[in-house]
Image (cartoon, rainbow, N blue to C red; front, top):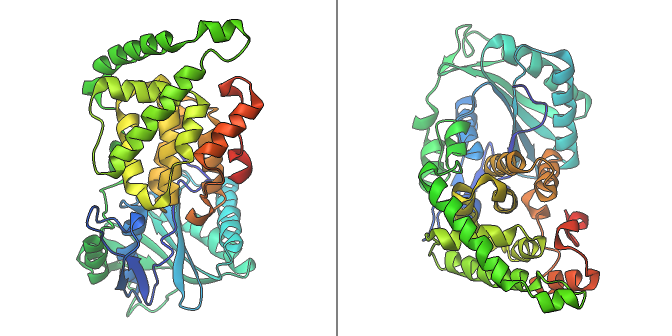
Length: 395
């Protein structure tokens, strides 16, 4: 299905077409999206650019338009994002893509761009022609416009058959030194977007045990309801929220230590507790970017194991932590999982809006501490599922 929105965006904040700084591995996970170390990669040719793109996205794109935004004194790739190619070509959708790409690049003050279309000429050419024109009209210099198909590439800006023959230039992105360096640094590449989506797909073998565990979680919650408090006109569900906050806080700490939660009852209770916005927002306030990898493991475990009715909160939290880490592809897939479970889930929609606007990971800030979140709910004294204090304003 064609889509005018950028499905996946990644802000490496470090890749350069000429002298790219890309993060290197840490002792716990060799993924530069979640670490602060760097390695240096130089890519100054078309095949070098094509070697870098899959590492920036996290997968090999197909039937896609990939945009690279370049800026700064060292001409670094500051932003990479992807669109599905309209098939069949559609003038209105193509115009939307061009306008959106120009808007995102201008908003990030990026002065140069590279466009790479992956697919047949009949789907790539109509889009890149319009996009390149829109970028130039927006004052953005177009450094390269390429098409990739079947292990070959064509340049739309080169008319010299000596270097750009009509039958294309063969290339091997996996064999390029830049690709090898990025792979060693931890920027792994999956076969396609579906393979990346598979990392958060439901664990079929856990479906029945988790349904049973969720029923036990319901009974546990029922035992925590304070009927005396209800009679006094206060919130009888507060003990459930308090217990849920403690459990989620403990789970976050365990994952930060490199541990995990494998017990179905524990996973079910966490998922049940996160359905309360007080618990979810408490967890949101604990998403310290230096622990991105640990947080992603926790939310992925919950997204894969929980029944569909309980997927939206951890999937939205996963989208936020992926955005924090600059992994727009994973964030996009997590948003899809959240909105499949609840098409109106506001946190997922907020992160989706941020990605669509091309906001960088630095915008994924935590405006409130857990104590401030709790105090905000205490002041409001209204049902937990009616508001999201602070977050909408911050994101």
